[in-house]
Image (cartoon, one colour):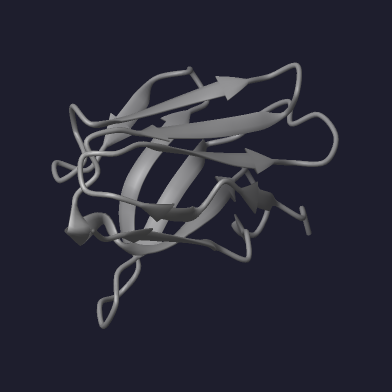
Amino acid sequence: QVQLAESGGGLAQPGGSLRLSCAAPGSISSFNFIGWYRQRPGQPREFTAVINGDGNPAYADSVKGRFTISRDSAKNTVYLQMNSLKVEDTAVYYCVLDRPSTATAWGQGTRVTVSS
């Protein structure tokens, strides 16, 4: 099972920015998608942003235009740049890696709190 290591969560003010990182050990040569889900208080985990194996990003409507996902293949790291943060972005953000013929791997989660 791949161990995904997230970092970058914390406290931000509304309108502020944070960048999350997710590092995977070793090289990931092929995958269906890698990216981020989040779980807001009292809500189920939800899709947020991913990159597929062709390098194409996809975003939830709630974050489109504010969040940007990117991948540094040399560092085996995926980033989520979060701008124009809103109180409703408060959540635990989970890194996810889905590969062919392998169980989906999840990180431990990193907490993001948006509050004034």
